[in-house]
Image: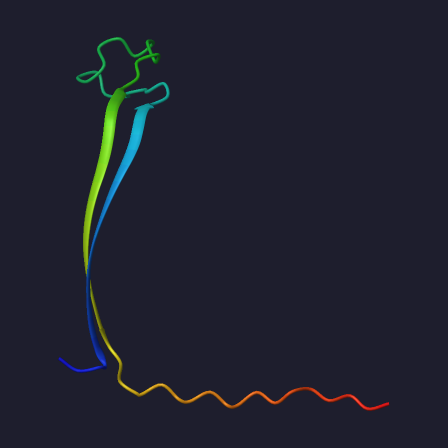
Length: 76
């Protein structure tokens, strides 16, 4: 549309691998009938992440020109 308006569409795929939780304890008898067994854990296999992002930028002020760089001079 204009030089000050930018739209960006990006996709990212990330393979996270496998994961295992540590020992889990439940203080609710309905979920864990044997409260003394805290060695249960969950395993997750083949974790993936698909990310789709949409970015919009609108530059309100034009960029200021950089000041010219002068060579450094040393005398003496």
